[in-house]
Length: 281
Length: 281
Image 1 (cartoon, rainbow over the protein chains, first blue to last red):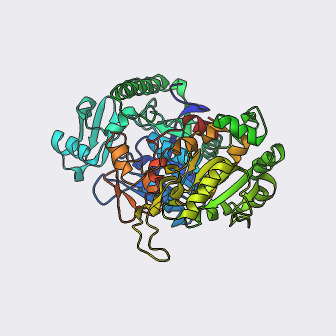
Image 2 (tube, each protein chain N blue to C red):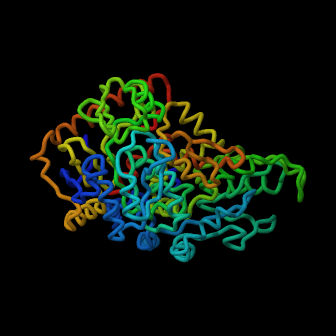
Image 3 (spheres, rainbow over the protein chains, first blue to last red):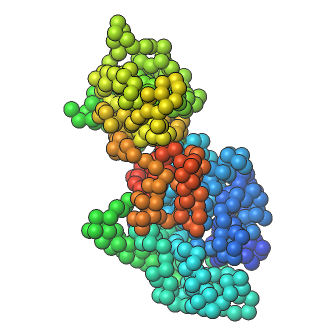
């Protein structure tokens, strides 16, 4: 199953104008965490918030919809969100916690829930895990290389970054620049090259732009809880949806990219095994 | 006799119970051992005889066990017979009162090579117990007692503390400083259920007798496996780990060598089937 176990796949976007303005694509993560917070499904959420340096995110505990909206948008470098989960419970007193995680972070969280060897009273407090599609992640210095060296832009001028249509994009106030994705190859962290999960197969629900038109996201609901919270949000009018069969580029692209990641990284795994290097998968 | 056969024998059943019978297996949020589950297990199986042996540890591991308030009464009265132990049952062993036969011995604490009484007790436990479990990190990896250099009261000659597996065969290990109440409850329920799939990591971990926060560098970062998720820093029980530029940074002054960071890392071992089962995916 190239997209993991799931219940439903739809194309969706937030109906909130404020979220549409700041979100990466359909505003699913922002909109859903804000909805869950307002409906008291969660009391707080760990998100990748703005850090001290431009485009260097820091995990933060958001306790209000405004704080979640302030953390909207994709960051293409590390934000060790999992680390903040314990702090959110211990220091912020959150009993019902939400978070957003890339596939590998989802694995760390799920392993902790199944085998909480040294982690007490946290596993059952995670009520909503929104997964995001992820092909690879970049060290911060790699991003600097793309932006400062390859594009000649001051990182402080950058308002948004994006990956799509085979390119890495940078938006400044009056310019849109891009480099072919090929030029970013070799700059990703190598831990990504053994990962077989593109669509966060173990999240409560997963989302990302791939498969949907600009300004929309493809949402995959997986667990009962994930599906039920997303349906509640749709009924409450937080999201509008479209049938995947009616959107371009459609589900085939998502399947294709997921299969590509699995095939390519399985080769890396096999090669590592041949060399006698450890592989957890 | 194989370990599996021994467990099955002491639990008094042959076939593996039907896993699908678990009533709430599809409910993603509930990953703990629920009360109904415990009661059901208690009804169905004979009570295993459990002993608790306290060597050089701080009693934190058994306190963690007792923190399973909601299931403890049921556990101690209906699920297991505590046949030996100074803390949970007032049973002491000497020349006139031989140590009873046990199905499972939970050994807390490392063993001091200069302490003849401890050595003697550990050897006797190995003879009397069908299964020996290194319970907590002191017993499993040496943990904090690895720092001992002797020369202290009450017995300055007590200098050398080693994990119990250095001296006797250990069948399974539950590392943690202390192990969480949840992992103890889950392990006990799995043992009584004969759920060998769940217990396999504990059996594998019996071989991990050396641990340190620097394992993250040598076994994960150095092996091109780290993805900067932050699970290790979340799991660290002494706040010895921080994340810097997406990689774990160890404060060696705080590390107690419990091994939990590496045990929880999604890139050290990956229990895919168990995670999917727990999520209902």
